[in-house]
Length: 454
Figure 1 (tube, rainbow, N blue to C red):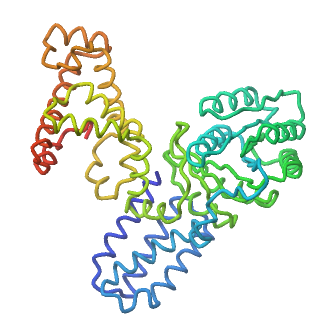
Figure 2 (figure 1 turned 135 degrees about the horizontal axis):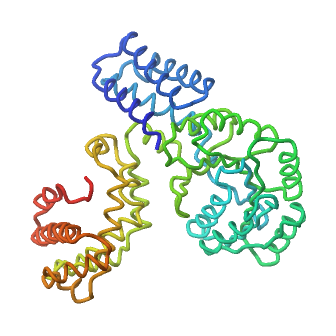
Figure 3 (figure 1 turned 45 degrees about the vertical axis):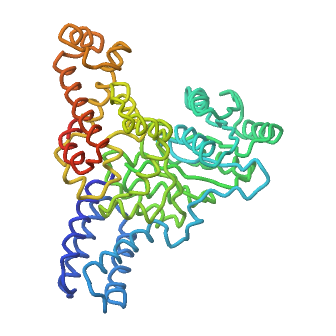
């Protein structure tokens, strides 16, 4: 996410931290590097100008003067202003969804075709059900795009929310009013409305969504925009903001190979807060947007809070406690336990997702690693274990040459892959023995070379 911008700004941060004192020359050099990094990341020019102006003003003020470490103080200014330009100055409540209305709270989703609206509706339904404990109904008013209604029905069922059916022959306003009536009668907390998009902005689309807005009077009108569009995302956001009373932005595809400038400039251009960011294709790949934490990630400081949240969502605490008790009581760490650890890591988003949330120095240490390949190897290891018998999983010492050949055939891999996976299991088993004896530092040293692809 925002790799190039992060690398450029992290380099600036590292240089400035080493400065014993600030001079006009090194401050100007730092601001020039920041300006170039932002422009390369497709941040809108007005947003760049305001950002540089605010940092320059604070750098020459009391925030830096009198500080024992001026370089660090200047980094702090950059971090605060980066967060402010993404919405931190609007206050913590601005990025929260509002439910302060008679149920159902209506959320209207707007955006161009291909921005990821329908998938985002499914992700948002999942988020509201699991994080906010809401009863959610979704409906599609997209009667133009083939299979749009069916796509929304599929993702809605996958996340366990309710779906209101509609037909391509129905009128969009009639569909949403019927869905609203159904939501009231069946005591839904939230109604999420997916609307039609176009490949570009046109008068007919804007007139239709304005009519839907007038009929529904939604408490939230969210503009869904593809972060990979760069400057086009900013222009589109401005057009929608002029046509609709938007309440917030949802940035999609922030995990792509984008320069990511939209994350910094859409809020600045529209004046509306970014409420969510799509960070993965999976239906749980939606994060509530936090400007402060996003600023930390962009500056290469990582997002440890997000990492903890992923762990809390993905880790089976009871299973982890059972494993700890088993090891402590002298039980052997077997391949069933090893597979469980692999599954836990997959639930946390895999290696690429975890690395993205770590500070820059950790990412640099693993810069030669192919995270996509690492995740592929993790899946392959799981497939090899699945090809084993229950007896082989609980007693890995049984696995000799003939069994290895059978397992390799069953998993669709070479025997060498089976040997490699068993060697990694032996390392993990050895580490668990050290953990039992309290040798934590020995265990940490033993982790060298453990992770696939690292």
